[in-house]
Image (cartoon, rainbow, N blue to C red):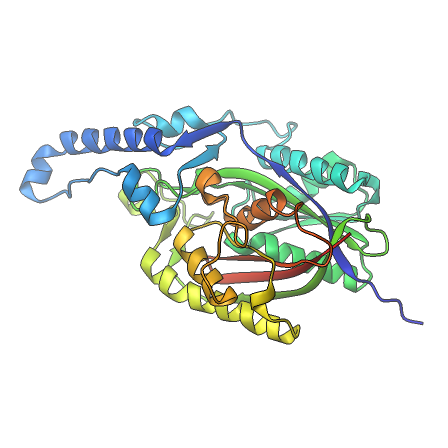
Length: 376
């Protein structure tokens, strides 16, 4: 007799850095840098050899993104016009790495909420947009710190890393290769952001999330059935980061600008919104579900305008804060962790039987959907 293994989400966890940068603070720092740059290059600007930089503003940031603040691991160096990037003490090989440290906090919180011991977990997937190092895998370091006797590996699908990780974990459960899998997403996105770029200096923040995917047979009474997962990728250069061991020009130099986060925002908006909305609708139809009946959408937290249009196309009307909650205003874009933060902070109030959607989209392009239903 063949056993049926059904994956569910047993619990989630969240680590939030203690330091936060408001738009007012960020704009003051950026504009001071702009003034310094323009003053240093006044002659070249006058001669037309160097382009003058323009000020940013709180109004511009909020209109462009909906972001009002973001948490970071290293505030002072980011706001210092002479550095404008995070700085932290390099750790020895015998010390826990930074990504493992914050991922561990989110993972332990998740296990506690599920009433689970680390010895019950079979695998750890570290799913994030940028890894602190190529190897050993961050997932294996987190596994070691938790004391898990199993396996772990890293995944990078940019802003969709967490949802791709959830499907991968769910597939392990469905196949009977694991009963309990932790998907950990430590996103220190401040490290790959160009804080000197007016069009993107406000976008990212730091955070770590964790999701425990388990076989329904061992899940706690309160959990979320995973009804469906769907992944999609389409290659695009419109969101890119060229940093790598084969090509490491200093990001501070003009020739190294694309070694940090760069994007063609308007193209991304135009191409991703219809792709993601249709992907959600098509998957709902496969489930024989009317997408307008979804109780809540936990969408990727990158841009308020994108979320508004996607939700409207899926639900058939402009979604309110209850139907499509946002954490973008206080967390900023936290890459793959964004939709998980929204789910973690805005799911306990739903009732048994309510259905919802966790959805991510970003560089690749990559997109992931996880349809869920609350149990108990």
